[in-house]
Amino acid sequence: MSNWISQLGLSELGLSNPAYCWLLPLALLPLIVRSQAAFDYPSIIRLPVDPISTWLDRLWRVFGALAIGSIILGLSGVYWKNHTVEHVGRGAHVMIVLDRSASMNDNFAGQQASDESNKMAVARKVLQNFVAKSREDLLGVVTFSTSPIMAAPMGGDRESVLSALKATEAGGMGFTAVARGLGMALDYFEGKPMTGSRVVLLVSDGGAHLESKTQDMLRNQFKRQGSSLYWIFLRSANSPGLTKPEEEGNDDAYPEYHLHRFFGTLGVAYQAYEAENPLAVEQAMADIAKLKNQPVRYQEAAPRLDLSNIFYLIAFLCTCGLLAFYFTEVKQWRNA
Image (cartoon, rainbow, N blue to C red; front, side, top):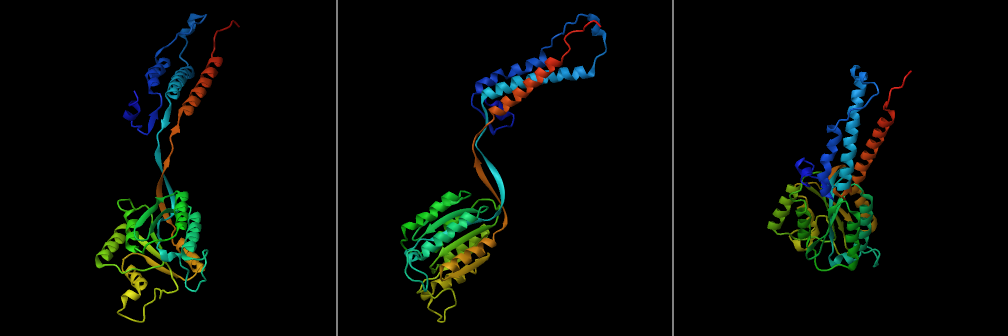
């Protein structure tokens, strides 16, 4: 009996007490059983058929069938199963790729040593503000040092993203494996439909010399996923920055510049922001926030919805209609 709903194409509905469905044929009784009203004057039967009375009789029977059927369905515990609801907003699919290397605990170039102004603390605060204001963006977090970690899968749950950012208070470790962090972020888009603009937001203080094989892999991934790249480069005091070095041929001394130059060859939208202080980080994030304003389609899980009360309400309304018909029906003809 519980398969009836599925066979009717309503697979999203379920029954808590399917046994009651065996009583549904009782709802047909008002449509089948016909009673003959008794009048004191049999000759009334010869009068022409009244169309209004005919339609009222049909409504009487339909209301009776609906009342019985609705009560049975209410007892059966009809509910709408857990399902996904599609929402349309304006924003982007943003995967934050946050550097967790030990150097992120250092201060910006020209800044005094302070726990409140080190690069990780500033990045965490600015990103938390960005998440709080990005109400229509889908956000995720990948952290990386020696190895990448999917700290918060992409979605509309702001609390999980904020928790992932708060976890960075534990301190940095290891080295800066930028390519592995970017690779994990891009892998998340693999096989998913393009329902909005995609953004990889890299927040890091270090560069890297990537092998040709790794460069080709990242270049292919970015093009395949159609993701733009923003890099907020948190410059340390001993870093020459992203500008072209005066000395050529000493690539090991300028990893940030060579990584920046490689990003420019990805074939996708790319923008770098070199931040030497907390204010520059905030300005970079404000600029990035303005660049994301395209429609985004995303799905969220909806909880199970009990429909029993709806059927009980239908039964109540039908019963009220039956009572109205009953009290307005002509029961007898009186002598003038």
